[in-house]
Image (cartoon, rainbow, N blue to C red; front, side):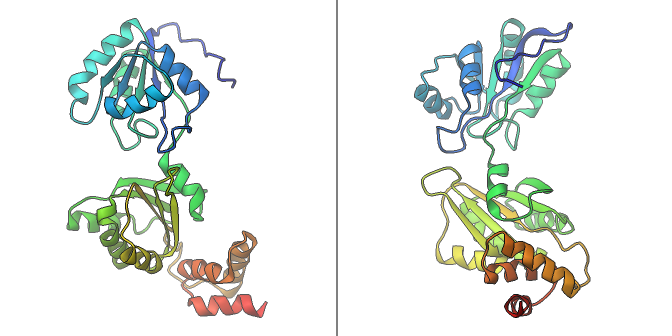
Length: 286
């Protein structure tokens, strides 16, 4: 649908529209023309942090009034925003990415829906999908589990609850806890293919790919900084070791994607229950 084509509101819609507007996760150029148009046209912008959002709004010469809406004031500010919707449209934005994904927004969206206001989400920047498509891990199915808990036992329980997931698992983590989390992933989930995506879309963007042990060694030697997204290969669907034909097919699939034999062998070994050297030998023989 063309972005200038507006869907007719339902007959019973009240007041204005609540627009859910994604903002850049790093690079300020990563915002759509439609998002800029909405931010300029609404009567109020509800922002997670008005100071952070102020940088973006100043960059694009947007002077729409703003109000803060964050984890600590979301209940108190809810009625104010709903009252603003009664007479005009409101844009909901977070500090970075798509509002409602691991940050405040759900309660406001639900309240707006329940009171009959139109809710219109815009597509845009999101760290989860950006990291996923660049990770080299399967993208057809994935689980996003939010932030890893801070307390040790809660972290272990959290990872244990994800142990049976056969799809790619995505979590957020603090750089200060990344090494501890990778160590725990190896202890709880075992050796798997893994990717750490760091500082996405920013000047020092980095993807570190390998087995859990290899990625852990990288960050033990080079302590990370910035925003961290961790992507973990899913559990092998069956506890049984793969048959050779299946291993060969998986190895060829990796090689056809253009990765080196060494990396392909490592990835397939982590999924199949085979030793990496044996997988590598299959590629050499062929």
